[in-house]
Image 1 (cartoon, rainbow, N blue to C red):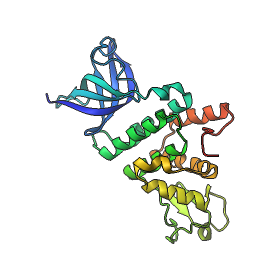
Image 2: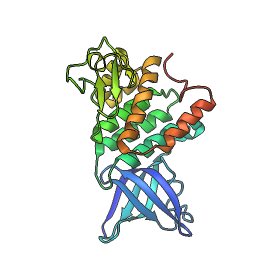
Image 3: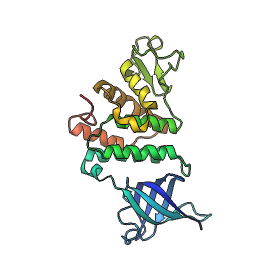
Image 4: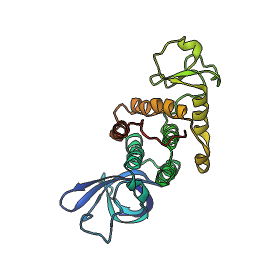
Amino acid sequence: MPNYINPAVILHSLDFAESDKLVTFFTRDFGKLKGVAKGAKRSRKRFGSGLEPLTYCTISFFEKESAQLVRLDHCAIVESYSHIHDDVLKVGYASYLGELIREMVAEREANRELFKLLTTFLSLINEPFFREEFIRIFELRLLALAGYQPELSRCVICRKAVNGNREHQFSERKGGLICFECFKGSREYPTLSGGTIKMLQRAQTIELTKVKRLFFSPQACEESRKVLPHFIESRIEKPLKSLRFIEHLGESKGVKYTNKCLK
């Protein structure tokens, strides 16, 4: 039985049997895996708190040829993102990222770029000056890597290039923008202003090291919030529990998701 050691982010952890845990984790070199951590509820030495969801760790595991689940041997925490757990809204956003990976990524498909995306944005959420637009950027980049990238440069009907000075509508079913001439004044779909479209186009290509330089206006935050999460749900064809939690939290505080967009 070969033994592997790889960086990983814990996506989900569930008590299993008397002393074990059933763990879903996303590795840098092996993709998303599910495994059993034998004795994890008893062994602080082998696992400690490293199997808590949204923990970045180095994980050791092995597998049998006939088994669907790998066997976790031990793990060591690289980053626990402790500041996320100090803010219930940050917990919601981080959980949303984890749920997106669980639902949109197939098992055992290695994707180093996606692993880098996840760890980068968990680090951003962990920072004091986190902004909601980081989540929109993550959504766009994940959609591209998962093969669901929305069309933001041309009208999905007439194929004309987007006019950055005019508003467009966004169709979940058609997968992108519909220009003014094609929607002919109809309000069937959510509307995106020219400024919001430009910002989303920039978000699709900006280097991850420069993400903090990108500032969404309040209008761009609101318009993109109405489009991207629900576009994702339409593609995976199921509701996202963490998204409902964020929406409920925003309503209870009298804000839409967060008051940390640029004013």
